[in-house]
Amino acid sequence: MSHINYDTHKRGIQSLGITIDNLTEELAFSDGKVAPTDRCYDSQESNPATCSLHGDYQKTRLWMAFRGRVSEKSSRCPGCIQKEIDVAEQAKVALQTEMLLGEAHIVPRFEACEFSNYDVVCDSAAKCLSIMKAYAAAWPDMLANGTSLILTGKPGTGKNHLVTALAKDIIRNHQSTVLMTSVMRIIRAIKRTWSKESDMTEDELVHLYTSRDLLIIDEVGLQYGTDAEKIILFDILNTRYERMLPTILLSNLTPAQISDAIGERLTDRMVEGGGTELIFNWESYRKQKGQVAA
Ligand SMILES: Nc1ncnc2c1ncn2[C@@H]1O[C@H](COP(=O)(O)OP(=O)(O)OP(=O)(O)O)[C@@H](O)[C@H]1O
Ligand SMILES: [Mg+2]
Ligand SMILES: [Zn+2]
Image (tube, rainbow, N blue to C red; front, side, top):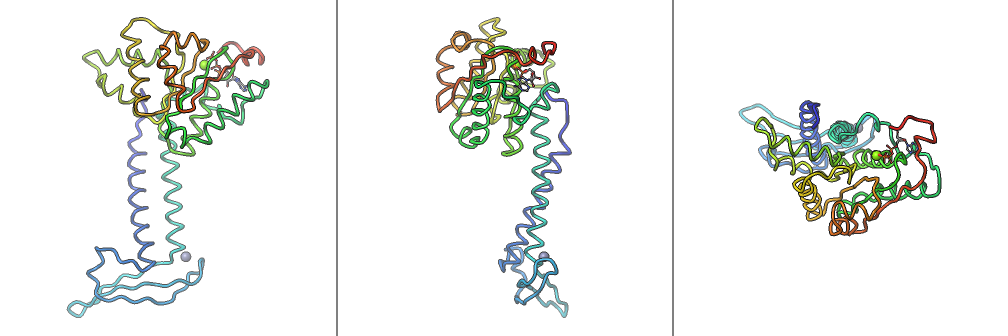
């Protein structure tokens, strides 16, 4: 689990949310709508005014006289208010993106992976890249329909590269919650919750895996020890299926072997809702680049 504490991010996001709400109310007031809390003012007028940046607008003024004193409130230029809302919204999105990227558990090796730095090494690679890009572009529909993907094939062909690029894309563009993990890590994390010292219950951990918008599970088929471990994985995948949440599996196994490993029923369910199996069957990029196997 992440060791980074995002409390300051959370507080920042919250306070920007309040700022945006207040400015939105102020914008409505500049359009003549008086909030219930301002009904104490008994007089209202509207006069032409000019902003040096945005030109002419109508200035609304509320006031009341009480025991010889006048209390009043005037609206500001709507263009200026809108600009402040845009700035606050951008800052909020930037903070949320940073937090969501941190919580996605993208490992340092893949941090720089983008669609734009994926080399099209052959026609099949071009097809896989274009399907992954299309999935990212249609993410709101994929999320609504729970459309899952299975990426299988030879080592070093860029399955992790493309899935990382996808994760970053949907976080940046849609502020979705993503978690990248592996079968082994899930099983280890679940086993940790069985210890008395664990700060998380098994239910809380399963909730983490079954509540993110997108769960990416690497190394499917590598580790199938006990039946208990199979049941854990089945439970997570099945709960996500029932909640119509998309899941992406990465594996070196063939589609048939994956069906053996996680059960045909689950693989069937995973490709329901337009999901598909992408087969990465070309030579390792690591070999082509003369890299040591990563
Ligand atoms: N077509 C490509 N263009 C650019 N970089 C690539 C490409 N394919 C792979 N890589 C790079 O090669 C390395 C290995 O790729 P990656 O880990 O994504 O492969 P994989 O298919 O997940 O392999 P494995 O099955 O062994 O896990 C990564 O650093 C990745 O960024
Ligand atoms: Mg991989
Ligand atoms: Zn203005």
